[in-house]
Amino acid sequence: MLPLVSIYISTYNRAEKLNRAIRSVINQDYKNIEIIVCDDCSKDETADIVKKLAHEDARIKYLKTDKNSGPSVTRNLGIFSAKGEYITGLDDDDEFTVDRISYFLANWDDKYSFICCNFLENYGNKRNSYFQDNNTTEKIDTFELLFNNIASNQVFTKTERMKAIGGFDEECHTIEDWDFWLRLSNHYGVAIRFPKMTYIMNHDHDSLYRVSKSYPFHLAYKEFIYRNQEIYKNHMKDKFHLFIKYLNLLALKEKDEKTSIEKLHQSLLKKKLRFQRILDANYKINKNFFLN
Image 1 (cartoon, rainbow, N blue to C red):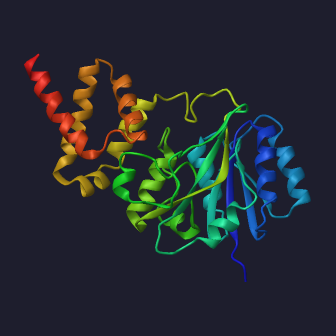
Image 2: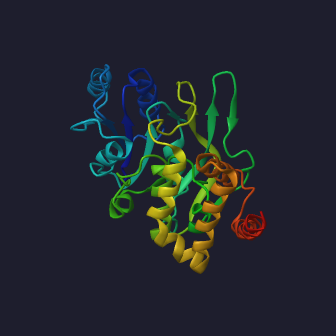
């Protein structure tokens, strides 16, 4: 029998875009799926649209939070309600390509903690691959995830694994996906990212960054490190304190913690700053700092 795959879609006040997202899942060439739409107390016509679609397609389930609670709580509502053997997510303003689920199933291997794909960024008048140098299958280990979310914003894995590690951390203000993938990798081992683009990330909304505007990114980034410090310490050993020291000294050097943390993160995203270079930079900043 073909395995059931659960797809959770968290949403808040994006009824029109949500309709597009749901239809991209309905149209999958793999049909044994359940579509769990998790509504974070939207004030628009979200409920009406989902209920209408659910009347047309029994695979759609509509869940709603008790109060507006944020993306992590909303996603967990879907995860812990999921009945599928496998699971993945979709943001309410994005889309799946028609073969995303079938591709994941064809390439699944239990020895990997999760699998994911490259994705297409759609800016309306321009489209481009997110991982532009990703032409081959790449292994993702926990050490790499300490510094960079190279797994993208959605992964495919066993449902029991997401449940076993507690789902998304509901205390996360932003980068909750990165936090989740790091914990999955730490618990279940190496992951895989395929070069095929099976996800379309639409940038047709007002937010420049796909993170909460209500909480500063630099604070969320530091919290991410401290929240997962046991994982960091396990992989960095006695070098963890140098990494933290580097962040603090960089803040002093820049005289602006927000700017310094965001600069560091962007460097990591572009793979221009690896761990050894962080340690080397720490030495240089220390030396220059005390000479000035």
